Image 1: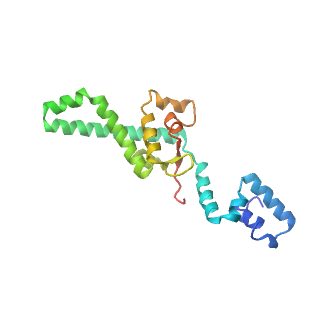
Image 2: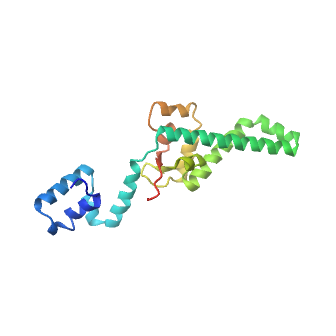
Image 3: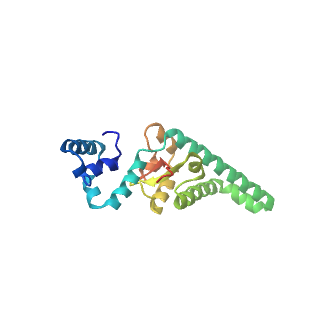
Length: 190
């Protein structure tokens, strides 16, 4: 009976009681408890149960630190590439005042570019170009699309000094913890 799916177990307990012995029903109930299946929700609101069961499948698929590191490297590469393109464009304008303004406020412009890079992509698609490469996506703690305030907090926390090193000591970095988001492996069947 352990090889049965969650839905089959729930059906034995609820809809198909007449087709099974008392011993089979009790065994199905024990398995449901072990798996943490919500029998009450299944009986009372099937649509909600199916939505939640799809969401809960995501929880177990948190992106590994290796995938997160690849995201970081790829996104950093794209940001550096964008900076090079901006500098080339500024040089082609040939205006000394524009170049001087760029150079005087370079840290500000780099920060603004990084902020825009993450906020725009994660707010629209829940992922950056790096996450597209690794098949990962940003979700809220409740496994839902993060709202704009969560994305803004997530992005702002990237500017905490040594924030990238927080992954050496914990599963989620500061920008995940403070924004109450996480990165998971995106599943195409959900």
